[in-house]
Length: 362
Image (cartoon, rainbow, N blue to C red; front, side):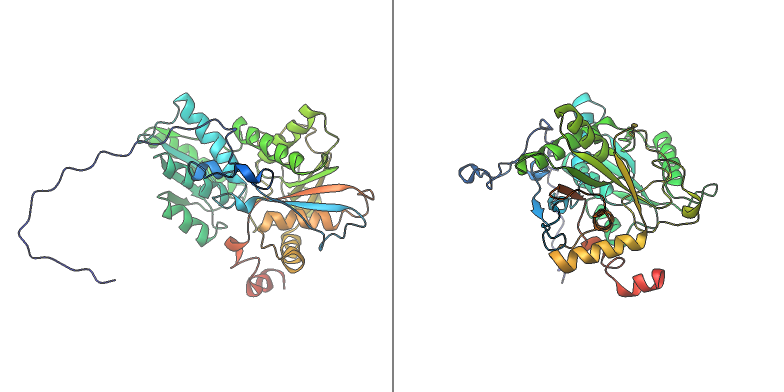
């Protein structure tokens, strides 16, 4: 691009325009019209935030032939920020705005993320005129950090905690340091914020509304456990027969200390598993827990792409891997839903790179 210069005499600067006020948050139940259900009510969304939710549920009949049991994928990549974390970010930020904990033009959000929540928060904070400092670790891809910065976020990268060898304790420690030093800082705390879980009452409701009856099984990846808790609470409140299967990472501590065979396994694919038990977790949310390795995630992602032409992220691959191994205990004729948290375009240099896969698993 060529930039032209001018030698004209300087003029007095025009008064700066008044800043545009941040939009007021809407009720969390606001969702755009769904033309698939009512073609006559399709309407323009009032803004990008209103498009969060109402993601498609698609049959995965090629990967899971329906003569045994049926599987549908809830494709969360179609949220505007590209992942299921848009739901939690909107719920947490709009609640804090409604209570005055966040003030547009004044407050700074400080949060720990492995990538997707950071992007979701960056989008929401830019929309509502809030600052954002996101603390990540080296597993967060360069593309994810670039997206956050494009929205105006400040991104800090921390290394492993020297005591545990894990990233999450180091990220949380840095968040607490920032809360002490940054004026008007606010920590949504995705690991303990009830509004993270409440967002997923809507997720489960959408699933049930899209099917003739509630699914027999719900497979989802567990990280903060917000999706797990929100969906399980909705199932319990509505008296649904759906059994929840939580997919965790080998080496994770969410559902208890790792077994001896898990120790020493280092997770390199973010999005599921945790080194700290999330405060959102409650006993009995999942009927079954399935643990998968990073290589399982890669295989699940590539199987989904090969058979269904769905380019999905690492935690989606984890869920698919768990389903591929579930044929021995899922009853004939059952209906399953797999929540696919994000797309694979942010994993092109890892999961979908033959060189990367060979370097780690070859």
